[in-house]
Amino acid sequence: MKDTRSKELYERAKVHIPGGVNSPVRAFRAVNRTPRFMESAKGDRIIDADGNEYIDYVCSWGPGILGHAHPQVIKKVMDSCENGLTFGAPTEKEVILAELISELIPSMEVSRLVSSGTEAVMSAIRAARGFTGRDKIVKFRGCYHGHSDSLLVKAGSGALTTSVPDSAGVPKDDTKNTLVAEYNDKDSVQKLFDENKDQIAAVIVEPVAANMGLVLPEEGFLEFLREITKDHGSLLIFDEVITGFRLSLGGAQQYYNIKPDITTLGKIVGGGMPIGAYGGRREIMQMISPDGPVYQAGTLSGNPVATTAGIETLNILKNDPQIYERLEQKTRKLADAAREAGKGHICVNQIGSLMSVFFTDQKVRDFESAVTSNTEQYADYFGYLLDRGIYIAPSQFETMFISNAHTEEDIEKTCKLAGEALCSLDF
Image (cartoon, rainbow, N blue to C red):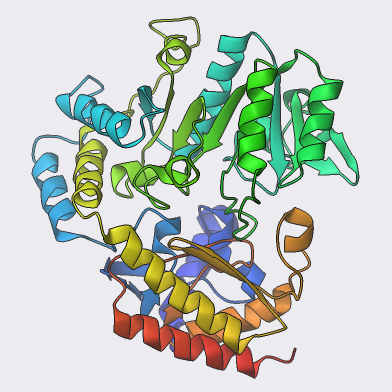
């Protein structure tokens, strides 16, 4: 496939944009390639600046559950644009979307719309601290919650209670109240509660981790988090920026039947447009200004174009009860084909319409096992597929997304090419 135009655009971009990209993973550095600059997308296909067409399994990092440019959503958005892009004032669409969110995710009795998943998580943390009167937060190594300062932390080796900034420019004081535990490790969580009695405001977790590759919660882990937070007067925050409306209509909390205190959602709630939301029990959300003392605001929050796209997307999902079963079947087929072709050399994790191929012979259950994956082999795998018209995440530690627009023929083609890619590797 030609990439002349993408290379030209990348060189131009590097002059005025850091690294030539507006989000780091797009640089393709982890897979030793030049990033492909995209021009259009429809259904399950995405087309780059050189005219190359790919079957897309990135789906804008998750929200494209219906595929790209769904005609019903596009029609509603175009109609909305005719009436203005943003007002900085309330609209009926904000109310309709909030009602729809509460109907589909009952734990989000009251919610606030924002403009991104990062903003939703940052605001949820502030609300939890305001409600409990405590400062400390527990997060898990390998779980990503956006790029706000207090959550860009990781633990030193074996020192789970010592948090250091994971990015230059983040003062140590901004992370001193962030405690880091190990995903799927109950003892690491218990230890933090034992050592920080009556100080922990909340535990925040991706109920299905999807930012160290896909890692599923082990049996009883989420139930344990629900129990220990209740016992200690702390809140449980589910970061469903990835899993919300994708794992099921009610997200991971419906799938696993666990009710968190606060939930955060990402751009799927706006049909892929820049939007996010956080919400929970009424008594918690009444802490938010203007009802309460926890301040949070945003000019574009609940803007009419994004809410229009969200309402239409969620209604399409709501009115198609078989969609999640179809997505599961397609994704399981891809996962089974990869397992068969790479038997003994790879680990494939899959749930619903999410999956990851790890290049390790270990079972991947946490951050420690995820990073045993051979990233050079993943880069070769990525390149083989890219050159043959299959677009997957340009990083081992991201997740593959399947949409309702993916056809059986495209799934078959992907299974075949993925098998060839795996067989071509020198394990």
